Length: 229
Length: 221
Image (cartoon, rainbow over all chains, first blue to last red; front, side):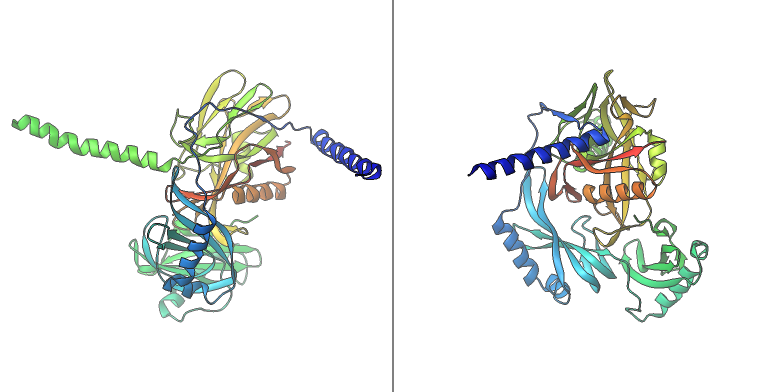
């Protein structure tokens, strides 16, 4: 390394150092320091090996249900990691994200709650869990996304529920010309006739309104203005 | 075996099973980390995670990493009112162990939690939840550099069924943006809190994700 290169490197280091010090001085906020924690029980956290990652994706790509869902949309892997009980690894979890909302229908067993539900919904993200011992899908949890315009299904009960949703006081208070779009319908043990979720937008915001399809009554605990950043 | 003995057993067994079940449920909810440490700033100390069960600050009893500090003129109520106010009994109260220079105390808090919230990170509806900790009274910590400050953990809960909780990093980013949009100066991912957590799911529904750097929010008024 010649003297010019060394001088340049040293110069850049000094500039960087001044910039960092300046930033700290400008804010004046001290960073805390860690004190060594004397807990010998700090567990070792497992990770997925490359082979396990590859096997996970092979299982997802060949399983009838998951391959059918991901087969008709562009998607990327947003996150992938192990499922553990403390230090013991028993599976893998993949969070996939679709390029655009996808309408999916089926019976899905949640890998988180173990509960199965019949669901029809728009999704942009989906959790898929793989059992690495049996090499089978452990469960799928499609996450409800903001629906695009247009009715994905034709159903008189959904039309009636939409009228109920759009006439809610909170929707009327939200603004003028509300537009409702169906986001999801779940059939679960606590809603055997189904519960429908509508995204209702106006020029001043968005509400989510849930309607119990057995009695066409709004389910208040799932209903309200949608917060955002 | 006489009848009175059998009665005792008949009564005792269900109670024991119930107690064991409660104990197991509490244990099952706690998560584990390899990153637990005490952080020190001037005379103050606090752990870099909060804890599920009280009076047990250990690496197998953690809930979420500390991801945010509100400083300058912060207190717990003031901070919650920037977001969604005080969460009622529908939010579980968890625990943080803090030392404001005069000995350790444990604070418990239910936090502040949204209704349905739009997550840009997941392109999905979630609930967003922050727990805010400080000794009470006075409901804030204090040192000469950070002023009055409170310690927070952040996470999402699944909407609508709350089948999973997690993604602390995404929730931190969202709360920081909400604070910024409310007019507060923020230092995003400002300081290393030594609690980075790679993506993983623990205990069935506890989803870890954190970069290890906490965001600071200036509560100037």
